Length: 118
Image (spheres, rainbow, N blue to C red):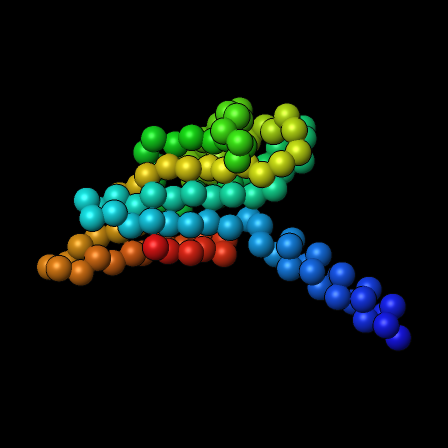
């Protein structure tokens, strides 16, 4: 019985780890920009697509250690060509998902990712 419980716990932990990717974080700045960072696990030599949140400016794509990744932008998608297994980060700024009405900031976006806004 204890072995079954441990096996189920291991499956739950593995499922929770898988559910944490892909994910996005958005930081709202006082100048009206939003910094977007999307991360996901990738497999070497298997192309991966990232859906952009807003129109990107100053886009960079890299592994979490800072090594650049080859990519191409196609409309609202970034296609990456990873050459190693790991976590890839797509980072950029955007003005298109945030607006100010008098003294309040508003965000308006749609995303397929689990997203945290700061």
